[in-house]
Structure formats: C-alpha cells, structure tokens
Amino acid sequence: MKQVIFLFLVNLSCPAFGQSLVVKTDNGRIEGTTNKSGDIRIYKGIPFAAPPVGNLRWKAPQPVTTWRDVRKCQAFGPSPMQAKPAPFMYWSSEFLIPEEPISEDCLYLNVWTGAKTAAEKRPVIVFIPGGGFRSGGGACPIYDGESMAKKGVVFVNINYRLGVFGFLAHPELSEESGHHASGNYALLDMIAALQWVRKNIAALGGDPNNVTIAGQSAGAFAVNFLTASPLAKGLFQKAIAESGGSFVVSPIRPNLTLQGAEQQGISFGKSLNANSLRELRALSADAIQQAKGGLSSPIVDGYVTPEPIMDMYAKARQSDVPLIVGWNKDDKLMGPPAKADAFREQVKKRFGDRSEAFLAAYPANNDAEAAQAQGNSNRDESFGIQDYTWANMQTKTGKAPVYMYNFDRQLPAATPQAQFGAFHSGEIVYAYNNLHTLNRPWEPIDQHIADVMSSYWVNFARTGNPNGKGLPTWPTYTSSVEQVMIIDKTIDSAPLPTKNQLAFWKVFYGVGK
Image 1 (cartoon, rainbow, N blue to C red):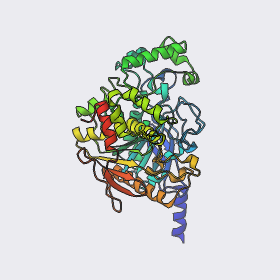
Image 2: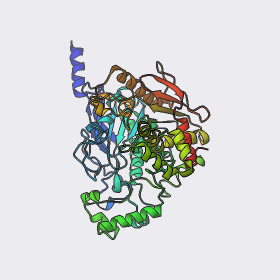
Image 3: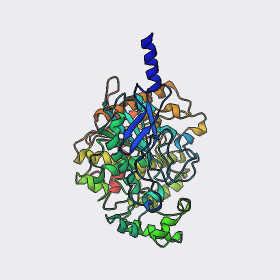
Image 4: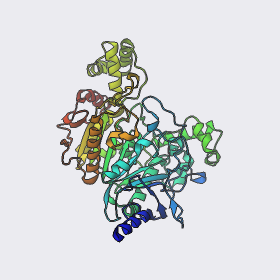
C-alpha cells in the first residue's frame, strides 16, 4: 500500500513519465503542459529569435534575450502579421490561424514530445506551415503535433514572417545586411528555428542529428529553398515536400532578380510616402499589412539562395538528403472554369504552335472535358511539374533516395456543394494523423489511410525510408521507372499516372532532360 501511494504522489508532482515539465534551453528554463492522458509533453510559444520589431524589422533574426525565471510555454505565441483569417474556397476554420493574437512579434515555435528522458534521441520533424507566404502559422488546428508524438517523433512546428514583413527587398536593406542582399527574411527565420532545434531539441528527447524538415504548399516551396541554401546545410537530414517546389519559373513563381525586388521595395515605400528605410521602419505594422504591393515570396538573393534552385541541383550543390515529394489529385488553385470554346482560344493564345500538344494532353472537346482540363493542367503546372522536376533532379545529381506519392482520396463532405475531392491541403490531416482536428463525416477507411500515411512519415523521419512492417511497399522513385505511391482507398504503387501530361510541361519549360 505504501508503494502505491508513493507512485501516485510521484505522478502528481511529475505528470509526464515522472519527468518535470520544466526544461532547460540555451536561453532559459521553460515550462510546458501535457495532453489529457499525460503521455505527451507540450511546449507552445517558445521564442527562437528576438521579436523582429522596430529596428529589427527586415533584419535577419537576432538572438533571444535570455531570461532568469521559468518561462511558461503553455499557449501559442502570436501568429505572424496577416489579414484576419476567414474561411474561403476549400479551407474551413481548421486550416486557419486563430483570430488573435496576430503580431509582428511572431518568431515562436511549438514542440510535442513523448520522450521520457532527454537521452532517448527520438527522430524530429520540423513542420513549416503553408499559406502562400501570406498567411498561416503554427497555431492552425490541423498542425497539432500530439498524434505524431504518440507515434514516436518529436514534432515541432514554427512561425515565420509573412508577406512583405518576410520578403521585402530594398537597396538600403541590402547595404546594411553585410551580405549585399535583402528579402528572404522568412527563410532566415526558418533557418534560425532549425538552429534552435539543433541546440535544444535533445533536452526534449529529440535527436539533433536526425531532423526532417517538412512542409505543405508554401511550406513545401520553403523546404525546396532550404535544400538549396548553403546556410541550412547540416541542420536537417531528410525532407518532405507536399505540393510545392521552385524549380520551374511559372505564373505563380515568377523570375525576379534581387535588383528587380529592390525596385519593388522602393515602389512599395513610395506608396506609403516612405522614402527611406528609416521611414518604412517607423510605420505601424497595421499600415504595412494593409498596404498593397511589396514582395511576398523568396528570391535568388545571392546569399540565402546563391543561384536558382535548378542550377544548385544541376551542380549537385543541394543538401543531398532522402526526400518524400508528391501532390494531390485535385491540387488546383483557380476560379470557375471557362467554357470549352473560350478555353481552347485561351490555349491557342498562350501556347501557339504547342496548342495541339496541350490539347492532346488535356482534351477539351466539350464543357465537361474543358473543366477537367483546366483543373488538371492547373494542378500539373502549379505543383506537379515542380515536384516531378525536383524528384528527377535529385535522382540525377544526388545519391539519397526519392519517394514520390499522389494523394487521391476525396475527403468526405457533408453536402455535394462541399465536395472538393483531394483538394490542396487535404492530405495534411492524413499525413500527420489529425483527422480529429477537421470536422468531416469521416469513414473507417479514412482513419486507415491516416494511420498508414502518418506511419510512412514517421518511418521516413526515423530511417530515411518510409517502409515498415504491415505497410504496403513504397518503392523508391527513379527517372527510368517513375513508380509512385497512390494513396487512396487502396494504397499501392503504380506508374506515374500523369506522365504524359507532365511530359508536355517538361518540353514547354525545358526541364528534366
């Protein structure tokens, strides 16, 4: 009886595996909380860089000021500056940040861990949220890390500066940087977060030498930039990219030089009657957020990104790490489709003598076919060709393996009007075993898919190979065989279904030869 009482008292004082919720980091002690069952420790709102406000606006992230007392890390820090979240297109509230707090002071990360001791060295996943580099943050419900922590990884998600706060380039900024470069502050934030992980994750039971960076949409574009940045080398050992990459200059990823970006910055300042960097930094965050213009995506700045990503991979200068890359069947970002006649005219105007080849890949003989062609071509140009080229370039100049997937499961919907298929971002709750965070009429098969897909992600984070006991075999991707994993009600490998369509874009953009 005495022994039972003793154990009960220990669990009261140390709710997570008999280990204190207070953890020492490089900057000071932090105190987290636990999930309801007490088997996962959760630390929210951990600062990984100083608040980028005042004179630190549009500067590389600076070190955090240390603290003496225990810092409570039990609630999310503010989300990055962005427009007030409101559901749109496919994305319900679960895909969005909380309405508040939203602040320029946003450089915080969150950690979920099931490790009992600091010596466990569990694999680490650092998730980079999407949102078009204009919205999003680690507090979105679908990015919750508890389920992945229960499967054995230490799960981290991060904030980074968005929009013009994260990407403004300006001649004065380039001059003061010490690197003759500006913009790409968001990428520097991500690198700072990875440096924090390298220094501190062992205290939370993670292995700093077994880190996987993962991201979706803009987060996947960011993962691509990080694999090509010399500043990020050695900070991660694997990479997962869901629907995103930056190999091909496209309508959603135009080619912009540092000089061109700097001129955009000058124009942005003039639109706010700010003719100098000092005047820009004196403006309120709200004034900057509400202004039009300014850069909101990464550029080749000669420092964070020394050369275009295609060139970095062609010269084998990328981080040569195992890669999971893929996209969704309905990965499209477009408005209502045009009628068949109007669409064929658009095709002729854009593609000229390549029009017949386009229509052979994407037939548009009637309105129904034309609608399908517009959705599929939008998917393939926006995401498919990026990830396809990424996989082919890695297999060409790298040694680490590539695993490719297509996510085809149509998410269940309460009404036909809400049926968007395997839409952009729809795979996230499956990949991170988070169906419970999204209000949908789930079926038993959905939980099975989520369990399998998240197991692939965990296995990959652990070993660089997604395969494991009881899972359908996922073959490595090679440019000669082009086998991909089809994730649907049936999960199995198959030849790349859109090979003929992607062949059109390979020729059109002159990539992947």
